[in-house]
Each structure stands twice: as C-alpha cells, then as structure tokens.
Length: 382
Figure (tube, rainbow, N blue to C red):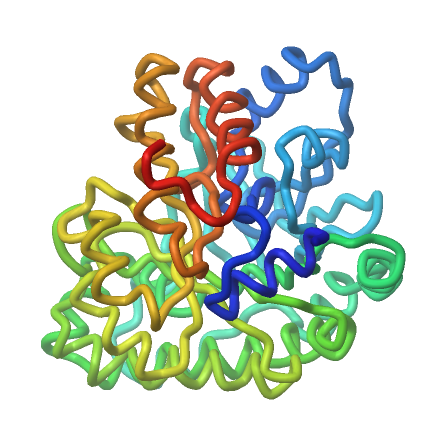
C-alpha cells in the first residue's frame, strides 16, 4: 500500500497496512530552531521556503522522507522553489500581513500580534467600510506555480496531496478585532461578529477561489485552521458557538467541498473543544487536529469512544508534557496513542503542533516507533 492509499483508507475509517504519518505541514512540523537541529542531526543541508501566512515554511523533501510522512502539502503562497513575502516590514522589525495585522517576532515559536487593525470599530459600518489590499492581486500571486506542483505530486509521486490554503476565519476575526473586543461582541454586540465574519468571507473568496480552481482536482484532503479552545474549555460558550460561529464554519466547509469533489476536510483547532465536537460533526467536518491529550476532556480514550466512528483523528503527539521527557516515556505515550486511536482506522499520527525545542532523539524516536510498530492489525499488547 502506498502513502496516498494509506491516507485515503484512514480518512474513510478503514484500516490500512499501518498507521499513516503526517509531518511537515502547517502546525504539524517543527519550529525553525528545531528544524535546523533536525537537519544537523541527520546531516541534511536543506533549503527553506517561506510564506508570510502564519509565519510558516515548507520542509525539505529529504526530511519529509526521513520522518516517514505520507502527505505532501500545497500551501498557498509557497509553490515550487519560490518564497513569497507580501508583507510590509517596518524599521523596528515588526511586519504586517495581507490583513494589516502587525506582528513582532516573539521567541522561537511564533509572532505576537502588536496591532489589531479593527480594534477601533464601534459600528457595523466601520467594519463594512474597512479596506484591505487587493484580494484578486494577492490570489494571483499566491497561487502562482501551484498547478505544476500539484500535477507533479498527483501524477509522479505516491504521496497523499494535501490542500493547505491556511484558511482561518473565526480565529482571524479574533485577531483583527482583538480578543477582548471579540469576546465582548459575542455577548453584547453579535451584529459586529456577523458583520466581520461576512466581511472576511467575502474578502477571502477570490483568494481561495483561485487556489481551489488551480489545485482542487488534485487534492486528497484539505487542512484548515481555527483555534476554538482554551486549555480547559471552548473560547466561546457552546450556545454562542452554535448561534454565531457554527453557520460560518459550515459555509466554509461546504465551500471547500463544492470546489474539490467533496474532498475530506480536517480542522486544526487547539485546546479543549470536546463540547463543540457534536456541532462540528453536524456541519460535515471530517476530522480534527491536534488532539491535545492534556486539554480538558480531550483524552484519547474519551475521543475514540465517543467520536471514533464520526471523526478522523490527526495528531496526538504532545509536546507540552511528553516530548521533553525521557525517550522511554515518549515511546510509552506513543504506544498509548497507537492502542487507543489505531483500531478500526481513522487515525493519522502527527504532532499536536510545530514541535518546540525538545531532545531531538525523542522526535525521531517517536516517528520511527510508529513507522515500525504501527502496523495493522494493531497489537494491543504493545
């Protein structure tokens, strides 16, 4: 069984030859410092391709093979050997993206938002009248070269082809408004939420229309993102999610499936989203990532028992508490993931986010163990 077949079997809740492995896409790779250390460990001098969407990059093919990854991504704005930097960089080192969000590099993990461009908005008109850069021009630049890469991956390789439009909607609205304003809006000014989500969706459509027209027919799975949870609860009350946010997430999923021959969609959402899972199933979502095992009610056993036949599970390799322990402890945890999530299919092994600085041997050890021991039928006596 090849990588594409293996991923498709898992996406359809069937048991492939072994548990598929997903590494090196948005929120499933490693931070830059760790990526470089991984290259040094394996004696790989790699190249790096960058897109200003979410401060991410593409992994070298040799590293993807070393990590046994069964997927290859087509990230928006990062085709072939091209780098894409459409943001404005300021003398103080801060920079803006296409939504005028201003960021500052913050440690090894990511960039902190230092300016929320719609924090000033007091009325629906303020949101409706706000202008971002030309979305059609961005669409053309961001999708340039992707079709050639998509054809190559589909016709010349056996990997599953991942659509990675990096499409955030709800989370992006929070960033633009500022989380404090956003949370107040959900309770006191729901009309502001509705106006902002509509504004964002309408702005994004030309960008993603171009992307899916370019690569949609080649995709085996699509990965989108919206962090909906804190460590112990959803960021918004479930009843607010159901009324204000669920319809827009449903619209986005339907939009993607209409343009990709009903391709499976997996949502990246950090935190405790257990209370939201029935609604996510209801709107046609196919799978979830990252399966943070130490967030409230997100234990593997609970998720598998209640949603194992409804959702594909992607992730589970925790870096908050597990990957910085001894290699033996890491392997013990990986065994648990295999035994709980593996039976019956529907599980793809991956990290819970881009891996921060941890012992490098733990990273390779975890992935090698799944590759060597995650074969079907699952050995529950591991």
